Image (cartoon, rainbow, N blue to C red; front, side):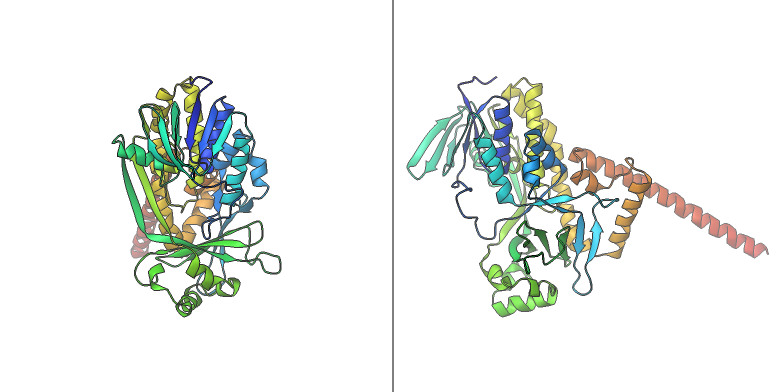
Length: 445
């Protein structure tokens, strides 16, 4: 076990890094958190970068383990289904669960980060260094170099954990040393945020739903906020017609939204200003291997396996990483050289499974949710869940409302689909046989 006088270094004081610091402090470790940005509790949020989170069971499970679930959920807004907004006609609600009682929770990323950061720094042995940008890391010695306002500073730690997001500087240093390989699979899509303010102090839309405007090759979603506003996120192609690149003038923006999102226009008085001034973010999947070097430098969360946001599992998955790493430390008696490889072995298949499911869910959300065939399939899923409780569970419920490992979810859903396919084929054969027998009887008469 690491000596008491040594500190574990966690690079990145975002969601995963702060949660990780809490778990490590609970194990008796001293922790140094290094963050490239200023303290978010005293600064101003970057425009158009709030991206609400859909906190679900995996994330809540991690928060329960450190006693933060009640505090975080005090400001949560439960969303029990999707509200589908067509171009014309009334919105349609689609429940997430068969009984309609299960919900994912709209949470402010900034508020959650602040709560975790405050909880981490309140623990004995945890310190945080803001405005420290990692520019050097020796994976053999654990020596780190940071750029700060006062110049470059160095530090060293027996274990360095990179929890610094999809653009991880820790991963970049390991790549530069040739101790890992990475692949970055970016979509030809980006995202941009808009805002629907409160109307007369009340929500302009139903706050108990995640709102979706599916438009075939693009979409918009909206999640409720405690101040009764909604944060909208456009997921559009980055190039071509009907893309971010194709709209520039206020008149073109107004025409496009009036044509494709007509119910949004009267609800978003700052639509043109938000559209013109909020940045376009990138979307992609990050894969790398291995997730650790020399048993002393490791990656967790998006730093190891960033995914696209279309299943609402990015933060939930990162939080679950921390839980799994904590279990690995238990099993390895805090031997990091054994725990870090075990963590990757336990978690890599799950990370790949949710990466694939998230990409597939993008197609579902933008193309399929408005389809009568899709809606009929969802109704069948719910009917089977009611008829076979515990034996048949939809993929969405397994992902969002359980802690079943993601890879097991995919395998179980494939088995369920195979059984359904066989039942459907048998029913079709019986029907064909019955029709044939009836026709034969008719001919004999």
